[in-house]
Length: 197
Image (cartoon, rainbow, N blue to C red; front, side, top):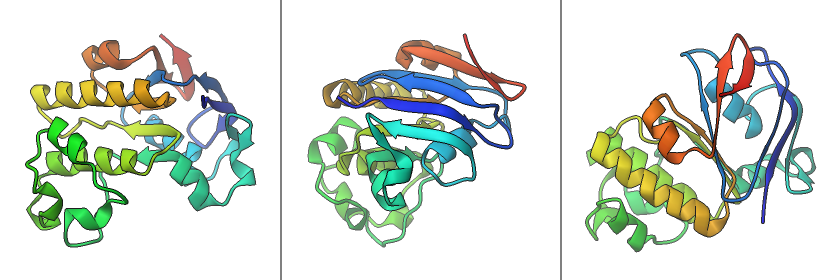
């Protein structure tokens, strides 16, 4: 079962971080706007300059081509990207049960992307990520565009998938109540340091 390890990972905003996220565990990260939460996730995904190392089990990120690493350690940004005209063009495999679980109609895969709300895009981006069978997840405020009921639905579905697949997860969040519900551990960024709460 995979575990995600950060060893001395740092960038212009963050001092070096040493952290291990075990399989099926959710580590939440919070902090003020601009403190470096999203940039931490992007550094792990090798999308921004940084120092230090990241490993998935014994595999060091530097030993893999970038696209292979990002398929294994999947970043779901707060604002997802959509390049095709229809929803189905963005999925490597159908996910009918996931669509149903997150409140979509059976024909949602045929919808035009142009008709999607921000909340629908956010839920579909999560389904799209898990359809790729990642070995770890980096979630940047995955329920930011959802109301309370929608957030709870996504939380329940995500946690069930995380446990079933034994995925290590870093979850950026602002809502303290959500952090209590989903997080096994919680770290807060203060003055460039990742501090356990």
